[in-house]
Image (cartoon, rainbow, N blue to C red; front, side, top):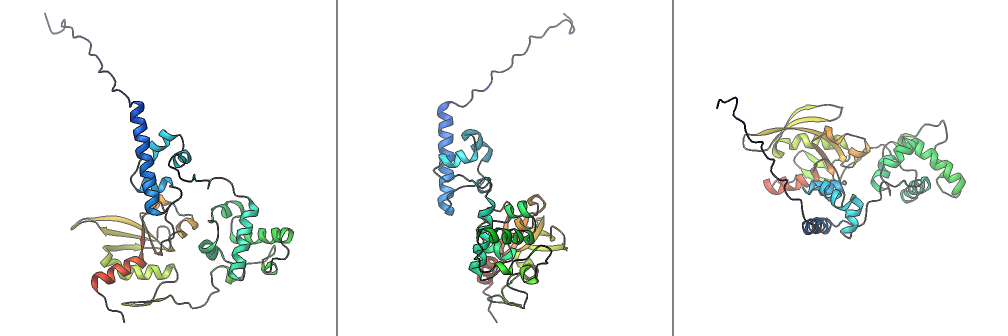
Length: 291
């Protein structure tokens, strides 16, 4: 029989692999719950976010498939679901600004409110845009709902420009941070420019070689040592506080590292280097003597 006449039996497809049994799924759910509870206990959390779970190298998508939604997963783990996506009433937001003004003893800036306020800047930006519009809305609300607000007369009116004192907090003046006593630096940074300068001084011992610095996002391109003779590209954004990255509306996909003085953003989707901690580590490592 020739090769052309030779017939081959049809290949049979292997049977599909058996799927997980109900017992397997139950065990997997229990394992994910235990991991979420351990993460929450370790970090003192009442709710575990998807970002926190992912940064712990845990399977976010699998948890959502097994439990139906992320909030249901938190509930199953005995944690508080994240209700941050629910719309916050305008009056609650404006009361928070009023309360911050009362606590500060005057009209607060956006920077001050971001540090001390009850809410983040997201809902304010979405509803009113700039901080001037927020204060205009506060004035209108207070005239109607709280005419005894002691700083009502200081709030801007339509057509009035914000004073410089509201674009930075406290009002512009030469300010000094707490004593740092690190070679070349007498005081801790008090703004982003100080963070940039300090990072430049510490770049070499921290394992960085700076290639480019600009006023556009991201602020800096550098190479970071990751091995004896191995370096990798690192796009850096400088902030005084890490959460300012979110306030400024930066894209996490365009940055590899946030370098800040104070890390106040535990849920940051971008790795954070806090120079406050790095100075202490380098001082202990090098046994650097203060001035």
